Length: 516
Image (cartoon, rainbow, N blue to C red; front, side):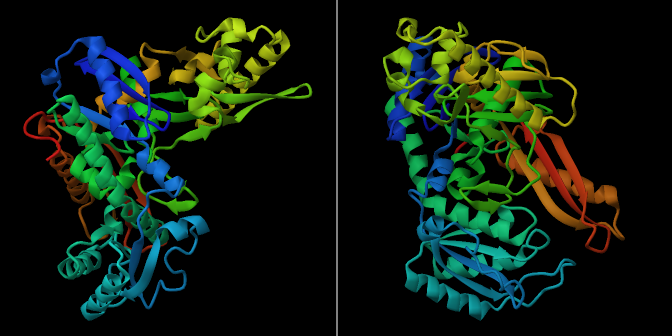
C-alpha cells in the first residue's frame, strides 16, 4: 500500500504476478482510507484474508506533518560539545513557524570528540543529571541528543541517554549518531525532527494496526523507508524520519520491478508534482547533498529526487499568447474542478483528454476549448518533463525512461533526450508495487582512519555490520548482499581518514513475526 496525501493505492502480489490494483481517496482518518482500499482490493481479487502473509505500507504522513508543522511535539535539544560548538545553538537556522511548533529548550553540555577521536572534554555526568531536572521541570517528553563527531565515537551520546532514561523513564530519546551523517548541525536537526514526530508515529502505527484488525487481517505489517527497504513497525515508532521520502522511492522501486530495468530514469507523474529519480542497481540513487525539509537542513539518507510542479491536476493558464502550467494544482479536487468533470478550472488532465492522450471524464465538456491552446499546452507539458529529465542525467546521452503514476497519461509522444519510453502495466499504482516488493536493509556510515590498519579488514568489518543490521531488521540471511559501498576521503583530517558508507539488502524472511 502507498498512503499518499491524495490517494491510497493498494496492490496484491503473488510472487511475480500482480493480482489486482486499486486507487482510493485518502481519508482524513488514515485508518478509514486503508480499510476502503483493502476492502476494494479483496473484492476485486477474491482472495481470502487468511492468505495474506504480509502487508507493506508506504506513507507520506510524517513528511506532510513536518512541512505543514502539524501534529508535532516539542523537543529538548541536548548538545554534547562544550566548550566548542556553542556559538550556533540548536534551532538557530529553523524557520520561525517550525521553531514555534518544535522548540522545547536546549542545553550545550560538556562532551564531544575531535576529528581524531580525542575528547573535546569529558562527559560531566552530574551536569547531565542537572539537565534531566530542567527537562522534567519543562514537561517536555522528547529529547534529541547530539555530539560532535558522534559518527566517529557515539559513547558520549549513549552514556548521556543512559542517564536520562534512568531519571526520565517516560521521555523519548533520539540520538543523532543513529539518524544523520557527518555534519553536527544537520545531524542534530535530524535527531530533533525525529523526536518531534515520535508521538505521531505511535498514533499512525496504532491506526495501521487498527485498520488491519477491522479487516480481520492477522498478517504483520512493515513500513517503507527512504532507501527502498522495509522496517518493522516498532522501528518506525522510533525512527519516523526514515519514511520521509518513501513515496517517490516506492515509485522508483515499483518501476524497476514492473519493467525489469535496474539502470534507468523514472518519472512519477502524480496529481500535483512529477518526481524524477535515477535507478542504480535497481535502487534510487542516494542524495549526496544536504536535504531541505520544510526549511530545515538535514543529512539523513534520502533519495536524489527532483520534484517539479506538474501533475494531472496542474492548472493551465493563458497569459496572452503564452501558456503556463502549474505549479498550482487542484490536487484531490480534480474530479470536482476540472472541465472534464463539469468544473471551471482548466487542468493538464483536460489537455490530455482534449489531445487524445487519455480517455476519462466527459470529453463533451471540452467543446469550447480551442485547438491552439491544446497544442501549445501539450508542447509545454512535454518541455517541462524533458527539462526535468535532463537535470537528472549525468551525461548528454539519451537514456531510457519509465513513466509511472496516474499522471503518466500526460505524455503522448517520445521525449527529447530519451532513448526509449516505458509505461508498464499497473504504472498508475507503481508506488504500491514498490512498497510490496520492499526488501530489508542495513547500513553503516562511519568515519575510519586507515593508517596502520589492514584496509580490507576494516572494509570487511563494515560490510559485516551492514549485513548483520539487515538480518536484525528481518532479512533472510541467505539472500543478503552488499548493494552499495562508497569510500570518501576526508582530506582535511589526518591518518588517511575516510568516510565509509555500506548498504546491504535481503529478501524479507517469512520466519516468525515481522513486526514484533
